[in-house]
Image 1: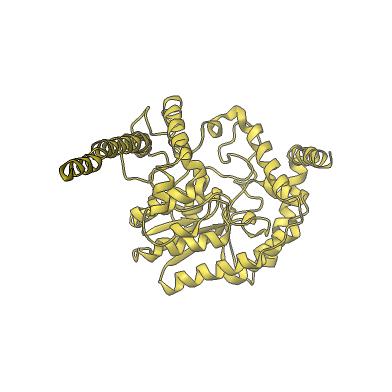
Image 2 (image 1 turned 45 degrees about the horizontal axis):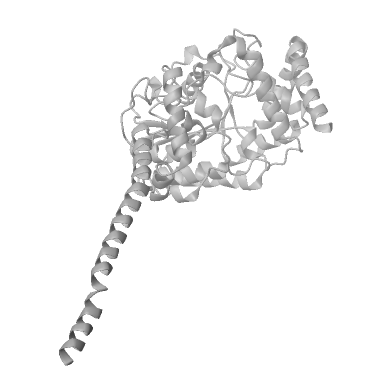
Amino acid sequence: MLRLNQKRSLSTTEIPQSPKVSDESSYLRFNRWFLLTAVLPVLSVAGFNVLINPYDLFDLPSFSGFNQTKSAKLSNMRTFKAVEVSRTSPKTVFLGSSRTDYGLDPNHPVLSDKQPAYNLALGAANPYELRRYLEHVSKSNSDIKIVVLGLDEFMFNVQNPKNPSFSEHRLNGTGLTLQDAINTTFSIDALTASLKTLRWSQRYPDYLTYSSQGQLNLRPIDRDPSATNYRFQTSLKVYFQSFSKPYELSAEGLEEIRKIVKICRERDIQLKAFISPSHAMRYEAIRAAGHWEAYEQMKREIIEILPLWDFSGYNSITTEAFSDKMQYYIDESHYQEKVGNLVLNRLFTFDIERIPEDFGIWVTPETIETHLDRIRRDRENWAIDRASEVQFILDVKEKIDEESSF
């Protein structure tokens, strides 16, 4: 009887063990397959994004017709430039807005003994961003000797806050951060950018969005003479729509310029500052918007901080006739590289005979009022000679005003 009970006891304890082991094996196999099917696609997407490298964050080669036209860099300059400038360790750095981004060539001959040079300008930048990027590049790079700083009216308007894509986390003096590495490899946005890179590389095989030294290249539409009217009109619309409120000078922006000056002095960096040479039609737009007095005050305030070269106003370059044969301007705000070459010539006293005599005026606190008065007189003469250009601006503004009222 005892043996029978023992057998029954053994059998009752042994019977469940066999299926339990089987269940555990099934669970393990299921988990392995589940993880495999979940992880493989993610890793494949990440590998594809790294291979295409749409933001140029990884130091990998690009191939024509495959991944050389990285259109995503246009809207992610604050990311890739933070990484690339750390990789470059430049001796010369350009700071400014999209005007500097387009117009100043880091390979200009005057910089042959000041290389490597890097164009660290940022579209729609405000002075705080410029100061932070300067701190970023100088934090791990003691080789910086020269900073070229381009200034314009956009920067100092309180209506121009930090760009939404600006982020402090990447400005730590190092290269690619873990957060940016994850965001640009394991995301749907990165996959979309990679696919667009493939399409653009096949459609525009000769278009490189940025040079290896950070300069923004002309887009296909920027090189199309027949699109001149469209580009000027679009740029003017952006100005009138973006700054429809009265221009208010940013005290914080001016303070950031003081900080940039201080950084350069403390680190023995030569600072060469200038006011960008937009086309005369931009200055007429400033006047039409009612911002002229504030624009002049901006210049007064900046000159109190540091003397500089002023390339704005009405001179041989900025008054180029508005037509589809323009050589100096992309639109009324952005100048071409050949104008930027003249700016660098003037800043570095290089090849002076090629510079129009009236292009670039050295302005100090003692000469600012005389300088502003001369610009006002020059404007009166220009407005008489170029009545059609003045009317073009007024027509654009009137249309914007009508749309706003509606």
